[in-house]
Structure formats: C-alpha cells, structure tokens
Amino acid sequence: MDTSTKAIFLEQCGKNRSYRDTDIRGFQPEGGVCLPGGPEVMLSVISMKEVCRRVSVEDVEVAFSRDAGRYVCDYTYYLSLYLGNGHAALLHVPPLTNWLPASLLGKALQVIIQEMLEESWGIQSQKYSSQREAAGGPKADASQGIK
Picture 1 (cartoon, rainbow, N blue to C red):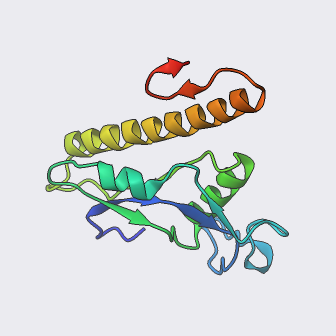
Picture 2 (picture 1 turned 90 degrees about the horizontal axis):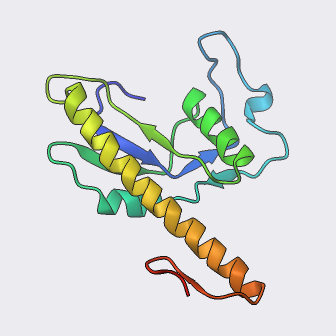
C-alpha cells in the first residue's frame, strides 16, 4: 500500500493472477498465479461498498476498492476468501501520522468493523431464514427474530 495515502480502503475482492513481484523473502507465485485452477476473482460476502457508504468517521476518509494490488495483501486475501468461501475481509490502513493518531485510527476501525459485523449478521440471518423456509420451518426476520 502506498504509505502516503490518507484513507482506509475496504477491499471487496482478491484476484488470482498477475503476481509479478517477489515478496521480502524472494517468493513469487509460480506463473504469477495465486491458486492454479482457482476462480479469477473471489468476492467477500460482505458488501464493502455498502459498509463504506454507511460508515462515517470525522476526519477519516473511508474508501471502497476492488484492487488490493498484486502483492502480499492481495495474495493473502484471495486465499482467505477462497478457503473461507468468501467470509474474509481486508482493510488497507494508512500509517499513523499527526493527522491520523492511533486514537482516531482505532475509533475509525471500531466503527468500520462494527458495520462489517452487522452486514455479516444480516447475511447469516438471510441464509438461516432461507434454509428454514426450504425445510418448511418458520420464517426468520432479521429485525425481529424467528416468526
């Protein structure tokens, strides 16, 4: 991540190809591919665009991204998304500075993670409701529990 950036980026997806740079220990994925035979793109089940839209922290920019770069972050994120069936998240966080002290960054991350958990809970609730309905059980309403 560019250390001069002044935003927290919420990454939506990890990509499988185009890894051309080596990491600090000299590792480079063979053929520039993270997972041979894997999908080209893995998406998080969390809508980072929605989280970004709903989050507001004074003096901190929060931005949506669909490109985590082709380096260690994207490589790790792709594998996490693949192995977790989309249940993973990646936040690119800027370095601490005078304009972004640890206390403000911590507050921003707390707000973002809380919103991500609420988004994730809504996804799980919908999945649970669909499974119950398919099994002939009562319908679940995320806002009011099981009906």
